[in-house]
Structures are given as C-alpha cells and as structure tokens.
Image 1 (cartoon, helix red, strand yellow):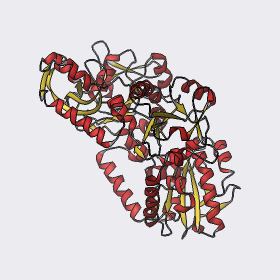
Image 2: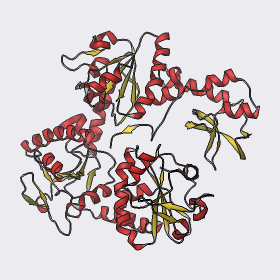
Image 3: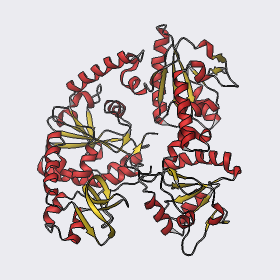
Image 4: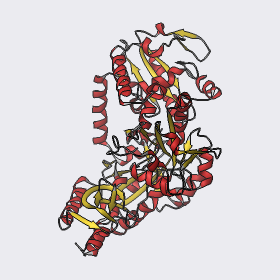
Amino acid sequence: MATDKIDGVSHDLVLLLTSEDRDFLVRNNGHQVKVESLKGKKIWLYFSASWCGPCRQFTPKLVEVYDEFSSKGDFEIIFVSLDKGDQLFNEYFSKMPWLAIPFSDSDTRDHLKKLFKMRGIPSLAMLDESGKVLSSEGVEIIKDYGVEGYPFTAEKIKELKEKEETAKKEQSLRSILVSQSRDYVISADGRKVSVSELEGKLVGLYFSLSSYNACQEFTTTLAEVYEELRAKGESFEIVMISLDDEEQSFKKYFESMPWFALPFNDKSCGKLARYFKLRVLPTLVVIGQDGKTLHSNVAEAIEQHGIQAYPFTPEKFVELEEIEKAKREAQTLESILVSGDTDFVIGKDGVKIPVSHLAGKNILLYFSAHWCPPCRAFLPKLIEAYQNIKAKDEAFEVIFISSDRDQASFDEFFSGMPWLALPFGDKRKASLGRTFKVRSIPKLIAVEPTGRTVTTEARNLVMIHGADAYPFTDEHIKEIEARYEEMAKGWPAKVKHALHEQHELVLTKHRMYRCNGCEKEGHLWSFYCAECDFDLHPKCALDEDKGIKDDNKLEKAKPGEGWKCDGEVCSRA
C-alpha cells in the first residue's frame, strides 16, 4: 500500500500525467485520449502488475466498480504499470476497461511510483476533481465497500462506517443471513431451510474457497468436529459462505458437506466478507445464540484443539491459552518432530536421519516452497548464514519443511540446500504449521537444544544480521543492536549529498530499505529524506560526506545482500 504524507496533497493533472513528448493516455485498443479531456474528473491512479498475485485478485473488483460508474462520466482510472516488459503489460492491460500511462513512458511511471511512495502493490490513489489526493488507501476502500462506497469521498466512507457500527449494534442472525430476495439457506441436497430455524443456535459462518488447499484441509477437520458436536446433541450449525466464482466448483465442493450454505453467487457472500472484514481463509465466524458475533475467526483454534475449542467463548479461549502455554513450556524436539513411528528427517538421496541424532542442537525450521519468489530470494542468504554458522558450531542444523505442490518441485528445490528436510507430503508439516501458526512463507523458526522455541521471527534476523544473529536469542540480538547504537554515535545527525542536493538527509532507523545510491538492500540505519522517501546506506552517505571514513567499521555494520519482491512473503490468501 502507499505510505503517509500523500493524502491531502494537490497535483496539476496535466503536469502529473504528461511528459515533454506525450500529452495523451492510451486504452487497451491503442486509442489515445488527451489528458486535457480529464480535467474536472475524479482520477484514480492504479499501481499494479501482472506478476503480482494480489493485484490479479483485486483487478476484477476494481473492474466491477468501474463498470458500475464509468457511464456517469465524472471519473476515470489510470493504470500505472510495474510490469517488466511490454508483452506482459499488454496482456494484463487487455483485461482493463480504463486508461493507462503508455508502457514506453517509463520515466513518468517511475516518477509516479516515487511521488506516491509505493511500498507495495496493488495500490490505488484517489484524486478529486481538483487533483487533491482524497485517499492513498483506495485498495482497502474498494475491498471494504465495493460499489457501495461511491463517490468514495471521506464523508461517504464515514457514513458507511457509521452504518456498519449501527448494524453491528443491532445485529441479528436474520440481519446477517436474510436478503430482500431470500430468507433461507440451502443444504447439499438442495433443500431450502428457513433462517428462522437457525435462530437461537450457535452458528458458524464458514468463509471458504474450493480451490484453496488450506480450506480443503480445514473442511475435513471442521466436518469431524461438527459431526461430533451433532452426535452430542449440541445446538451448533454451520453456514458456508462460498467465495467460488464457478458454479460447478461450488457444487462439487459443497456436495460432501454436512452443513448449510448460502446459494452460489449470492450477493450476500461479498457483503458478508466485507462486513466481517475477511482477511484470511479459511475463516469461521461464530454467531452467538443472541445473534451477536461471539468470535471473528475460530478456524485456528479448531485446527489446534478440535472439539476442545467449543463453545468458542472468551472463557474457553483463556483456558486454551493456558493449554498452549503448558505445551510451549514442555516442548521438546521429539514432541514437535516425532509422530507415531515417523521419527526421522531426511538428508540427501533420502537418507533417514533419526530425530534423536539432532538432540542438543540449535535447529531452524525452514518453511518454504519452490513456487514462492520470496522463498527463492531468501534461500541464498540462508545458505550463506548456515555455512558460516556451521563453520563455527557443528551443533546447528536447518530442516526444510516444504509447501511444494509435487515431488519434482520439492526435489529440485531441496537439491540446492545443504541441510535436512521433512519428506515431501509428510503429515508432520500440518501439525508444525499449527504449532507455530505459520500463515506465510518463507518462515524460519529457531528452536534451542532443549526443544523450546527461541523465536518465530528468525527470518527477519537472518535478513538483517546474517550469521551474526546466531543463536537468535533476545539477549544476543540486544547485544548486536547495542553495538549498532554505539556505532551510530560516531555518525553525523544530518548530511548533504550530491545524489540528493535538494534536502538534507537525516540519520534514521530503518529496519529494511533499498539504498538509492548503491541500489543494494540496507538495514537498521539510513540517511533519509522523509519528504522524498530517499535512502542512502551510511557507507554511501558518509563516503561522499567525508564525515566518517572507517570503511572496515562500516562493513561490519552492513548486512549481506537481500532481495524483496511484491511484499516480503507469499502469504496465505
């Protein structure tokens, strides 16, 4: 999404969207539209790219809004591509009914990206008729309100939020599930069941997607819990809110489910996703017997505890947390890596290594996959750290836990790793994912020799400190940070630099950034211009400034190379 210090800024539309040799925008059929003709219209700048999964998911939602209101003639969307080639641009743009900055004008596209301080995509900047930025959070607004948000002014959004709050205060099962054209849910055999029959019961709203593996796996677990509760006579029902866009997929997915659902493509599905601010799948919202929301998502609790999570009350979750705490304190390497007779990991050529042989070692559990670009980008950094740590301490090992889709992908990815792994398709992956709440990859979990968890954020530590982060304990990281603090005391608070003559650069703490000088990734400290979102690594800034010339000292502070693409992780949808 875009950063702050953008909203409220006014821009001259012609200067913003034209260049010295171009005064037009283009449509996907090649037709040119003069920028002058857009004066007096609301303009949305859509920063997106074909390689970005979240962008491809969001674009159809934006098309729906555009198709609904473009006939009014008072607004236009302009695509600002971050694609790498014109063929990819053309293929992606062909699905868009709005305008675009020509792909050939990379200078304007780069300028807009910097001007609107892109930190991630998709991003949608909403400008009013005068060129004033109403919001840099257009993606979130469209996701939350869709066409109902029109004309997307601050006043309209405030009005919708107030309506939401009122609706939540007056919420009932009927207000959630009944629409003007429907007062029923359906069963897998096609029966229509009145919503009134569900009133007074505990009801789970199951947001799911048939093509998503995590939903498929959770459905099996949920069905077991549901059937067990029904057998005990508990007053609990489930209504699936399907996010499928193909009826055949919906029918095939639903036919084996023992609960109810909203009909395929029912408009309430999208509204409920926005109403409950759906952010992850699977999600199981629990509605209490009074019709009020009891819990926003108990899916993780059911995955972890099964029927023990019922009846999903605050008191029950306090009890579950105590159980979790006791598990963490009693955790051993065997308790997390041994399951029945499966008591080994594998090395190269499938050689089985007993888990008992890893006792007394510091372990990193590496959740990753070949299909995940950030995982492939992080791998060289982790290999470098691994080799440096092993050179100093043999009592250290990494175990690869794969989310690959097939054996061939696993084999190819694992062949480039110098450590151990769980076999492909190993059932222990699911239990480890639940234990460590893995919702995105790459994920790196540090486990100490006793088997207790040291940190679930070892990936960030390796990215920033490399092998120096070992053994990843809080005490050790605090020592490293203290050394960086001490080092910075010798640097000037501000510098002037030839690469950014218009403003002084201020010494600033930045966890991760891209140096505008050497184009390499930096961590912890940068000399920064907040107005222009411009970073220089201390070495780059101080070599020019002549403030400090101790290159050896600076090299110790400089972390190894890294790489980030669209965000830092491949997250669960």
